[in-house]
Image (cartoon, rainbow, N blue to C red; front, side):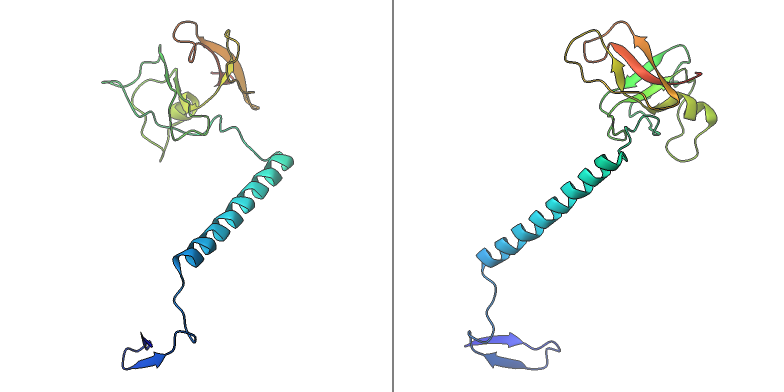
Length: 161
């Protein structure tokens, strides 16, 4: 016989193992696998619907704040590219023609909106490079003529900047 505590903990009630069985590890694991499988299937279906509807945005233009800011801030004459930014869906945070230190993702100035944002590489000389198309309001402009193969090339830049 097993003893089970009552909800209000005032008394215990004897029940036979046939009346109430604890779940086995195998049953728990099977339940968890079923839940995870349903969640994965729902995610795949939602992604397929979004892609079919054309809702997937590239993330170009999303706000970002570089992890490493030079002492004294950025110079307007330099271009800074952070290629492992977790803030960007494209993983590329760009500082372009921006002077100073970005204030962060909260209240951004117009200079930050125009000069610090997520971008992607839209053209490169080497074959096999992963490239994107620039969305409306952006143009593909060569900004790195030197540097490694993974960086050198053109990026989506806000039109008019």
